[in-house]
Amino acid sequence: MFEKIFPANYIMALSKVNLSMLNEIRLRVEQPIVIMAKGESCYLGPHGATLDKNDALVVGKKELEDIVLRSADYSMYAINDQLIRGYLSLEGGVRMGICGEVVTEQGSIKTVKNITSVNIRIPHCVKNCSLPVYPVLMKNGCVENTLILSSPGCGKTTLLRDLAMQLGQRQPFVNLLICDERCEITGMSEGNSILHIGSNCDIIANCSKKYAFENGIRSMKPDVIMTDEINLDDDIEAIKNALTSGVKVIATIHAKDIYDLKKKEKFQDIVKDKMFSRYVVLSNRNGVGTCEGVYNENLACIYV
Image (cartoon, rainbow, N blue to C red):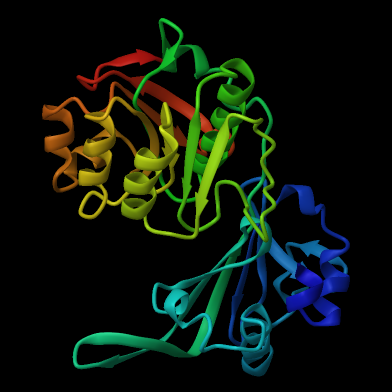
């Protein structure tokens, strides 16, 4: 994928980096390129990773525009719906976050122009990373309704991927439905996925959670729905509908810890209704994906 969007000197530099460890590539106009590998940041120089800022590759305005244009297959119009949401979904579940000048018309966002920075996030499958918490999320052979929370970049989606694989292997007759709104969980591209879950998994990709939940429940009769980055304003009704239909839900949300989660508007409704019986808190304290604890429906810690 990088060969498709980056100039030759960037490709040469990245060839000296262990891509299996690469999490992010940050490009800002007239600034050094910053990469993150295994949760640690450094610069990208002509000969690979470097801590020397003076040796780093610097992104020009025209270079950045060309990278975004190639990522859009040379049609900015075709990707405008994604652009106004601040990101592009690329091959293999790679996500390109975008910042620039927002163009509005009568209060509505029409597009983003004069792009000044992008953040390319690369997904990875980390096999068996969910095994320490897997038994805590099960009860009488059934998975508990689970909400995984952390700050951005601390392993929520990675844990969710491995949970999908573990359920697929350990519960072969449990029907999984993955609602993959931005194609980040499965890396779905042209019908292919970076996940190899098994024959019991169905995937609805590149659509809203409302659509995926409503149509998935109606047409596929899932036992468990898995989804990433829920929004308490937009997605709670869809989740409630799933739970009252007898479907288990495993989801993720942005929050540093339980205390941050409590501050979110509408979260008290979740606790009052006991929508989730397990809350998994992750951090990068001892590396990305550090489990800080698992909490029950009353927000009492039951596993560290």
